Image (cartoon, rainbow, N blue to C red; front, top):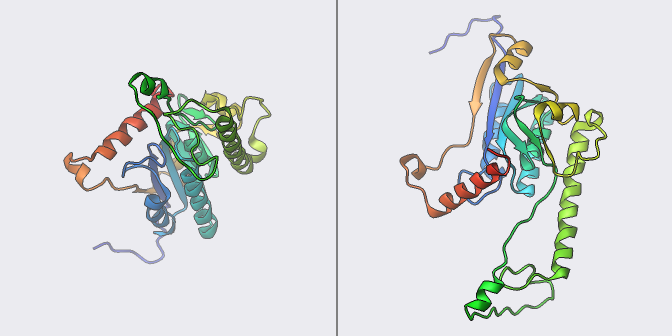
Length: 265
């Protein structure tokens, strides 16, 4: 039982939410809005925190899930009038940077990778292989655009043009989010929104982050050495705790590893 003395001011409480991994992948441990909703709700509401910290290590992923998570963070921050501070670990790129930009301030390690404000769509083409094996692809649709970018048929220029329109629209949404959140802090660097990535010091010069710093020292300087940290995070799936992972989770882990590898991590 904890005794609380009246009129004794308690040390500031800071909630720390860990956002690690790719966003919106198929595996059950992936970052997505539905899984993070209760975690974020508790972080902002429990114990009246002086701030909520986002501990980010993500190469990106689904633009929709990134936007949903970021919007939830902003709603909770405004509803409870709690400042949000992001700390980048290895990487906050693409959707990972979308999450970081949802904070009021962003800090990173000097060697953290930041940026990749762009959109990517990747696939494969297997029509030559199928032809060599004597296989014929048969697709019947109602609507000329229903079967777009079928990997088992030759690439169609009209499909590619339609895809680029979609990618450009998503890219515009990403740019709007960053410019709204970072405002006058942003540099007028031409390459800012080309999908390029930078280490933290260059990212700071571009206005993508606010400073170089680690979680504990920055928070102690701001809230005092007696501050209390309360950590929140997504729980691992029950079976995975015993090493029993399903095929979907294994494939998701491979894809997530490939996402990190794009940044040399």
